[in-house]
Image 1 (cartoon, rainbow, N blue to C red):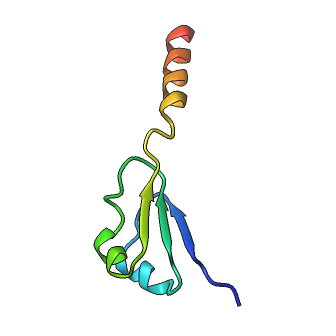
Image 2: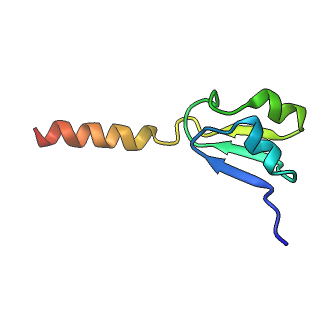
Length: 71
């Protein structure tokens, strides 16, 4: 039987989902911040919560420059 120890998502991680995964150790939220994750409930369960700030900074800059050049 397999168990989920890590969860990577774009948000919407609430207490019900956290409780449905009894072996969960880490939640990695893609994006800036983690306000869509119930961090207080995760902390009570000893689950680490991380995010990925600046993960798309260069890509956004490249796209913006490309759009400027294209016009």
